[in-house]
Length: 121
Image (tube, rainbow, N blue to C red; front, side):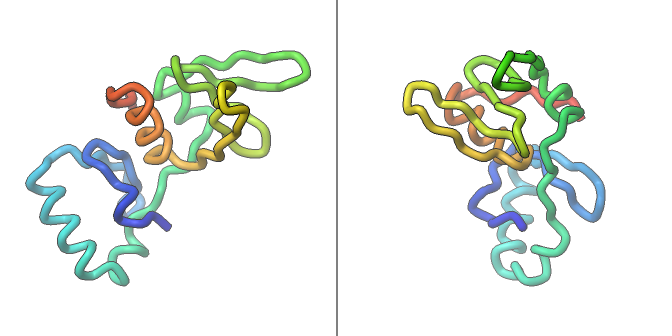
């Protein structure tokens, strides 16, 4: 389930089974107002798009196999370790952060680069 505060303009989500991108600011404003006022109704209809190899390819990530580590998906500056899910690797802080959906990856990428993640779904 997605919490409303997780969504930004440009995030991709699944709505009524179809992938949609939130691009229209006015439409998004009205949609979010309705979502916030009627969250119980909406939460069943808006779903996260789970990360997969296919989704990562569509976001221009490149897969690299590293001995003893496994698969690493790269799109500078984001590195995702593929090990029972996708984990953002922050070598400087020596931390891993689980990223399980496309909108989380979009938000992470934006926070690190101040640019939108290229998504071609």
